[in-house]
Length: 270
View 1 (cartoon, rainbow, N blue to C red):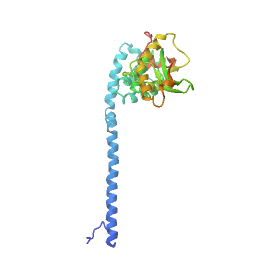
View 2 (tube, rainbow, N blue to C red; view 1 turned 120 degrees about the horizontal axis):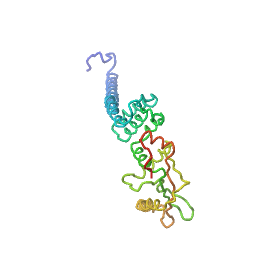
View 3 (cartoon, rainbow, N blue to C red; view 1 turned 90 degrees about the vertical axis):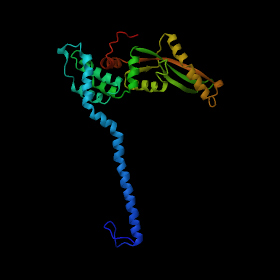
View 4 (cartoon, one colour; view 1 turned 135 degrees about the horizontal axis):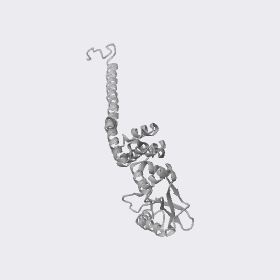
């Protein structure tokens, strides 16, 4: 027997009341499920809330970081930076304070924009370029600019008769694969080229054979592993390993960017 209640329609029969109770339970469950969504959103965004809350302190830390970069600049040369560079740079740096590589680049760019003698070297595009770089991109680019032309090799597995080619590794520029893993480094180099900081020039090579030999020697273990893992579909007796030798170059635009965002003066280029 059901007691009359405002939440039920007393004119309904027993079967209808039971259905209404089931429907109400379903609605209740839906309400509970719906309540999970805002909680999940808050949980997912809570790290960003921390960044937003710390934004002012992050800006204060940025000002501190600018001090050593401007300490040798005459007071009369310290200027208000162009808003079209400074505003997006300050907004971006406030959200990457936990990364040394990107924070340093934004700070260097701001310092150049605040110096009357170097403000002409900055461009608003530089802010967007840094925003599209990962910390590893910044680390690799910083290492690349120590040379304007860098030897690079790609490794292929070629069928001896048909000439069918299978790539093993497309871009090898470093010898330490623990510090510079092959796949992340290739992604990084492709991105740096997309940003027009470097050029992958497959039509040129250095006249220094020993530098390519060092790269190819470092790849032997990796190549041997590739051959072993694929021997069931690529029979080793029908294939041979081929190395293409070429160069990476720091573009002129990349050099301007390095001056403004890394403080590179290119005095010690190899």
